[in-house]
Length: 267
Image (cartoon, rainbow, N blue to C red; front, side):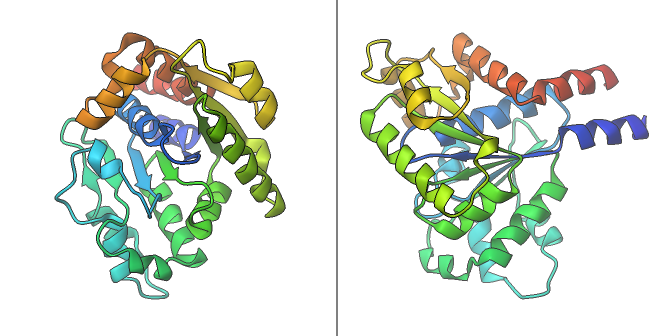
């Protein structure tokens, strides 16, 4: 049994970064991807908030009163020191899904961002990927280059989340060009369209053509009014049947549901 579990874990081990401009739904999707897998598997799922200027995962997971994990780590940072135990101890564990662990971003002391260099950011991601089976990382576009670049380079898959707004598409194209200039490997980038209207100026085909990324899936099921209200009130969007199906389809495309089914047979 132990050998089989080890095989499943090795096959499932992934680092998935969600990257985009602000306010398109990537944090919502990151939380719901993680919730879905934590709910339906015994895999250990991690959520890392690397949107350090405007972090928000703590809001979705009702952790407003808790100390920021990244803030604490950077306060305690010492070169040549293992942060495995420190990260393990400072994970916020979801009360409904004990196999869902979250590391929240900076909220009170943004000046600590200056301490987050390449080595620090890389160490955090490397240690967390050892602590969990699947790690989701929420990052911004080019607001902070160091955590963005380190997360995108470490990721096995990068999910580029966009909505149907013209400014979103244009800004995303600009940031993608910046990544090309920094020699980022774009082949692992995949597109997710958060679609809230069938009458939007930019259709799925037009968005896919403009950004030149393979379309992984769409989130067509929740109206913008319901989506915004659910986000504000912190109600998980998995209660919407079509949204849940869209999440499942995307996880399937990422070959994560294959791991789910294997794990189900073992338990």
